[in-house]
Image (cartoon, rainbow, N blue to C red; front, side):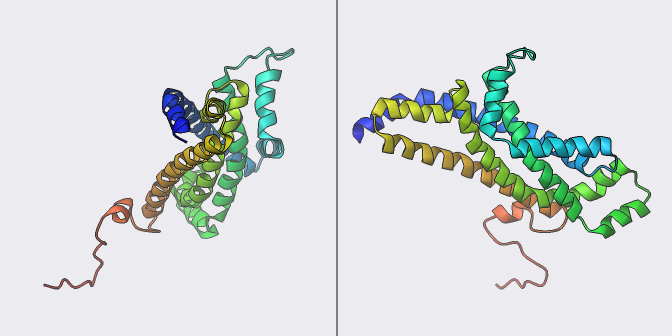
Length: 244
């Protein structure tokens, strides 16, 4: 065991590089997925077919095909004729993650917007707000807290999906685990370290997303503020007596 730990210490520089690559894949992939989610989610609700039908086709295609096949297609097929488009491995991983999880998140956007009570739509219409202002000022602020728990789940799935990037020569966290297994020849130790590292990474993101969810809910009066959640003493409510 001591030899395994020593090998782990020796590979710490590679671990740092692997975490950095995984972080880049996660942040950039999540940002792209969020943009795609709103484009496709709003497009799926459009009244016109030219916007609704293509949005539904893209969503169903990327939800219905394997992420690993999508990554391989972007990396190995795009450079071939008639496309002749060669992507950097990191860009390829980000694009695949963004498209795949963006398609899933699009359904979250669509469903959350549909969950906003009809009365809110009617009130926004009565105020003579245009479509864009109605969404931005009334509907999305109420739909956003509904999206957050599902976005958190998808973000954790994206972190785990980023491990597939090791198959297109990216030296990410999964690649480091493989190198650790080769160096120690101890499969149990290497993959146990991998489980712990991915758990810590995912749990840190979960805490961040929970904080954002609390902030979003507080803005629409659905829960305590983040400051109240993190404070050491409970917030004093009206009617609470102060005893000497």
